[in-house]
Length: 314
Image 1: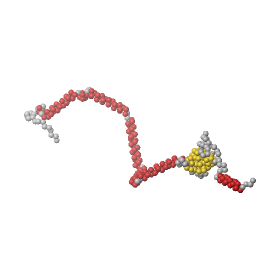
Image 2 (image 1 turned 30 degrees about the horizontal axis):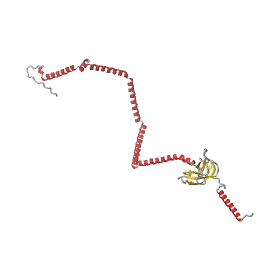
Image 3 (image 1 turned 90 degrees about the vertical axis):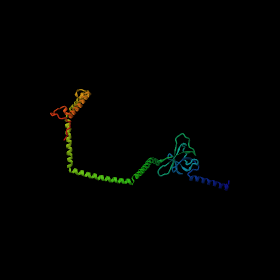
Image 4 (image 1 turned 180 degrees about the vertical axis):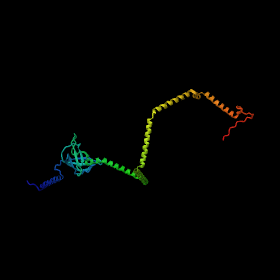
């Protein structure tokens, strides 16, 4: 059986197309029978995640990120296309988490398998997307409160410096300079006083005399205190108390009208009689002064009566 040239040409062409297709997939690190699965994860911020970033499960590389696109319906949401070449089964509640493996490498993606009774994730499912803050995120979280405190301190310091600048105007600066000058004058006077005091201390005479006088005064005061202490103050107070009681009894007797003094003070009729008697005595004396001859007749020759004349004082 002879094979025609056309059939040979067709077989060769098919073989060439198959080899080209296999070579193309081999260059893309894909087998001839593609067994990869594609999943999706949504993020509001991919934190620098780029295509061809590795995907790991428990540290084992199972695929890579093929591309990152914007969600066609959700505004501001990014969709990461996850290509997994491993056929490991996991729950659809598993989390696709972006993280930083170290300080030098870029962002990577790991799948945290959820151990639950959820359904197995199938090709084309969307996983829960999260972003791990990583070491830098933890550092930023620790530094954030300190940063706020530093910013608050800077703001307060700025306000304080502004207030100081407002207070320290030209007039206040002038007043402060004058106060410092006065303070220097006071210090100089205090220095002079201290030098005089030192000079007096060196001489010793004046201070010794002052101390001797103070010592004598304290000695005299001690003697007076001893004399007062030696006196029988109790007996003196008792005697004074007895005298005051006697005086009170006398006053009570006078107020009661007993005795001569009491009668004089309490008997109104006696007081009136004494007053009338005094008035009559005064009138009698006046009559004797004006008409002495009515009471005393010493004239022998019978002269006329002369009125009373008051003696002229020298």
